[in-house]
Amino acid sequence: MRLLRLGAAGAETPAVRTADGRTFALSSLTGDIDGAFLASGGVERVRAALDAGTLPLMETDGLRVGAPVARPGKVVCVGLNYRDHAEETGAAVPERPVVFMKDPGTVVGPYDEVMIPRGSVKTDWEVELAVVIGREARYLAGPEEAADCVAGYAISNDVSEREFQLEYSPQWDLGKSCETFNPLGPWLVTPDEVGDVQALGMRLAVNGEVRQDGTTKNMIFDVPYLVWYLSQYMVLRPGDVINTGTPAGVALGLSGSPYLRAGDVVEPSIDGLGSQRQTFNQA
Image (cartoon, rainbow, N blue to C red; front, side):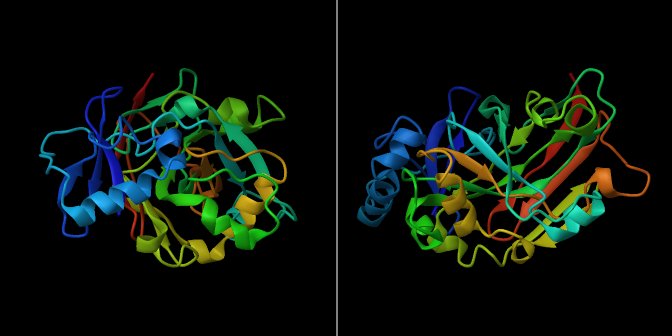
């Protein structure tokens, strides 16, 4: 299934899109797609309602697509998780996951405008596989327990301001938590539909030119390992999002450092998870 949220920001209607392209409203089952919905067996209730044919069809023309998860409790990010990305940035390949947090308020819809911060000269893109937690993960015994804690997957654009991130502070927060810096969606795709999450092609184009072209099979630390590892240091709760890293091709590592400017259009995509499209404008 593909869960999504449609409508104006702050007033989205929860919905589900089936394999045949039809969209059904979920308002009779839940007020929103959030941590409480995921924790209470919401995905299973949606599946049962679809099988029973009790959900109303929804007209989607002209409706904004919001982030597929409302109000994530936290956004946990993993840096340098692709060997080619570490190499292009001149960083050592990490022996343990590089973990940092991103302000959950940065999460916006997949087609929403992204704001280049005032004073920015190095705003960058990063297509990433996002993992959405569906069940509490706390001190998991091993990576094999991670699958039961995952509600689904989505595309994330981990937008970054490299000067803020790398030159203004020894920590990365300043360059990661600017407003609108985490487009998410368009859908939350359940694991049964995704298949092998470590074999997904990932691409990102800027103004029609492909900049990133990678695959999740090149992750240094795979999804089950990351969920297990993070659960040893923090409690992952339903609705939390994990950004799992980006492949090579970011502006930071490209010749000429072609950072984003107002008017640029960025289009991330991942096999089976759809695509996004953002226009960048000045804050």
